[in-house]
Image (cartoon, rainbow, N blue to C red):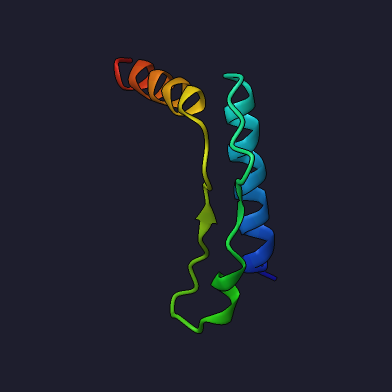
Length: 71
């Protein structure tokens, strides 16, 4: 049986949160967008809400992304 969409989305959010934590970055509003489940789109594609963050977090995220892009 294929994984349910909500299981896959939840796993995705958990993996993203864990990856961000490795860099001491926290997105407090990171979650599965529940409105994803209200639609009937094919193929099913869920949304992850990154939410809001303060400027210090945005700068830390920017630095990590720039460092990764340089590899």
